[in-house]
Image (cartoon, rainbow, N blue to C red; front, side, top):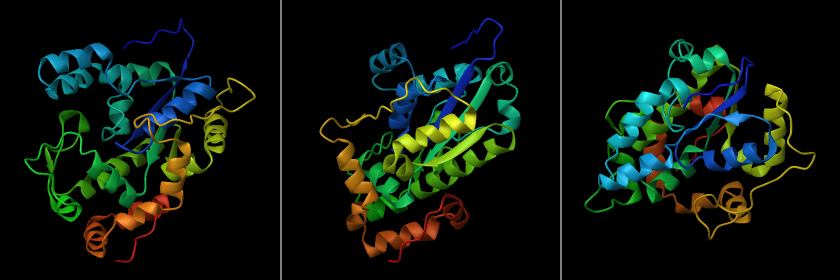
Length: 260
């Protein structure tokens, strides 16, 4: 996708965040409330149609993002490229570009990933503890090696990559829980950080789920902010996660290790 702006430096924002971290929700909040254009992070419908014709072959999406990365900066769930690479792309040179990243508590995120494992094709779904110890097979657009020793490593690698952006670009690292707790303040923070104008004096929230129609904003408040997800973790699962988590990243994002 090429973006033309008639000589003006158009204000653009790129959102990065792993699967199940609220990137769809944040994208909708920005679209509803801020005067800024988001660089796309998912494939267009025609690519989805081609993928269906090829029986769901993931390489179709991988090829798309390989070809278009210089215009859209890749899949929204990718491991972020180095700032040196991003600066070589025209979209970063010619436009007023900012980045927003979204991080989710790794314990609740792993439970979400277990429920929606995306590109993992198991003959039989493992239990959660085995899932945590099972190697994670990536796709090309993840931007990392083909096999990771554990899905916990996926959280470490992706969230670590977001920190590269702060060296060279305007960047804001948000936590999913903070956005959920006070979405209006999150949008105001984005606007003030990057000097975006509000579309209206009145903030607009998104009340329905972007993925699960039977769940609303209230459900997610209860589940995540009251930390109801803790009830789904066994002491053994917590120990397995703790063994693999990056303590430096946990400290940076303000999370704490659970006690088994």
